[in-house]
Length: 194
Image (spheres, rainbow, N blue to C red):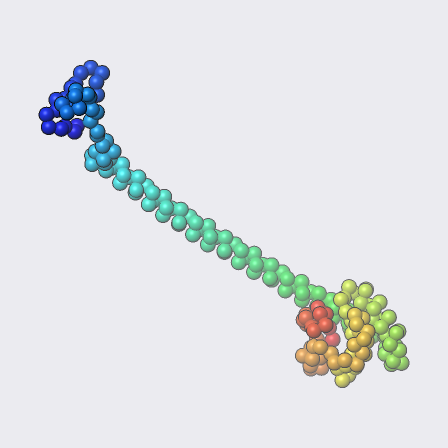
């Protein structure tokens, strides 16, 4: 209760803490209490603030721990999925490479291709290669001369006499008798088999 000098407190039923101020000619002036500051100073108020703060710290810590665990689990799962997908992709490429290599072996014994290549008939050679390319679902087939130049190409017939864009593949084929590798060349042919 705030008192001014000379004021007399008036209390009674139904009356709040009112004081009569002699200067204000008998008017009642309500006293001002700062209950929020008073309750914080009490032990109960301090205890509530401490527990609410402690609860907020524990809740934030739990959130950070759970978020870190979820993030680590998600990364681990993604890495495992990528590893499995990569392994499967490599196996499929190897299987396709072996399939194309077997088809190339078969084509090298084809009498029509040998005849067309020996007579230097470009149209017949390209036709035989195109038919074989469709049978084995290859993107492109090329017939190379012993010096590494292109004699026939199913994708770009205008490349006759040009150098083969994958010289390392030719070197491997000369050393082992056959070679197969999936590469992207300048002409954007996705795979080549010698």
